[in-house]
Length: 273
Image 1 (cartoon, rainbow, N blue to C red):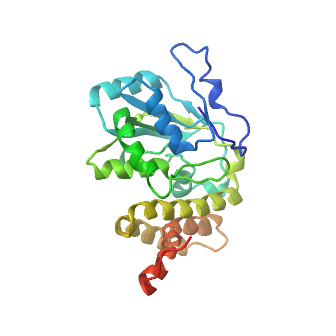
Image 2: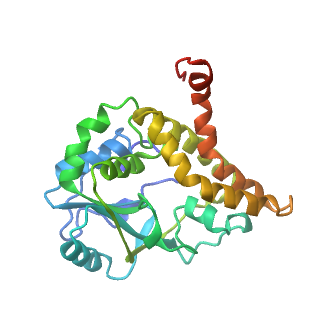
């Protein structure tokens, strides 16, 4: 359980179903680490072949543990994840009712989770030995990604998946192993959404600073068809449609992360902060 000073949704809800008295659970608490370091710490503390990560605001679907154990035992995957659906008690505002924004809120309603390029960090797993091998490499990078406190910094799990892909490991999604995202009300405001997109742009920039420019361009090329098609689709919507501006903002976050590279490309100057 990571407790790192975040105050944006109150008390730690994860402790309610990971209490020390729960059979078979050994509770480990870490503070002031950030989510990237906490993932590596979990690999050190665990004795199992896999580590499965859950956000503290998700609720487990039927027979979650039984399905997860059976899947790992039979498939022996490298890494992957399960589905994340909206908790039935959550009522979305109109501006959030589009697949793009829902996925941004870590919800798979309206999309096929088995076709996701990467698993979402709220319901994902990885072989423990892979985490242990990646730790020194990740910690030696210029930027150690992962949320700390209320920063909304992100991307540490995407950083892991990227590195595993480069090593030839494969993502295996299992939509039957599902959780329900109990989204806090604060996250259902346009202000929070836009602030989150801003931090995602910063996270993108830092992640590609770790890798260099070439992987960034590959990633951008892979995303470009989707960005273009969704941009055209939403450009022709009425200006009064809130989803129009929010989705367009969302799709251009990669381009805003690219802006700091322009001085280097155009004037051969070093990349600044």
